[in-house]
Length: 61
Image (tube, rainbow, N blue to C red; front, side):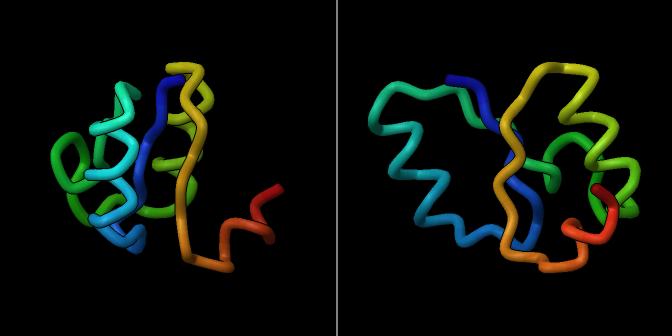
């Protein structure tokens, strides 16, 4: 699977998913400090599963 890990996501999760063979992109690498709406749009446009611990994303849906 392909994931986009928000900056709030624990990096241990990113490491574990990568170790399991998954493709994980981090917001910190591609769009540091991006607004939530930009992060969501990026995930949707690239077909990535968004990983976040930020409860504000629920309001965007």
